[in-house]
Image: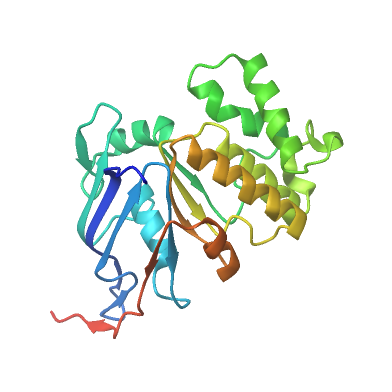
Length: 240
């Protein structure tokens, strides 16, 4: 029998819109989103392009400030914090240890070696540089990044190689909640299979995941819950 776990994240009626003041309109993105993310499980977001799937993840990570709704996150000490109105310092602390985000693109310092980019989250948590780099090399090898590239800055890497480095950086610290925005979009089938195995392994270690995948087959292979988002109905006009 599967053990019932309390959600680490509970989102209720989340809405995000963008205001174009010069045009006098509000463009809706995600609307009325309700979902939970639970320890050791993956919740997949599905729906048409433009339904606001990425906006949900960015609201949780607070790259976007939600327009309304609540996002209750259970911290390591058991207390809950509403990410919708958490302070910047609180969000920085949560990103340091509790909430990770693997985006579709690698953003990093231009002259930093791939192994050091991957090791950085562990170093920030207090791991020694030697141990962090050893773990980074192991993960880069698991994700099929050629050894000749480990000490090279990723600026000249292919799209798939950059995404593998991006994945390794996001996965290495095993945050309590991991956000994934189409992490396998530019990967070959063999590497995708390795990523699936790695994500399943991380789930078994108790990490909660909220993810967007491009291919329905990946949702079938990885998701414990599926939440379908609908398109917002219309643009709102602002009135003076």
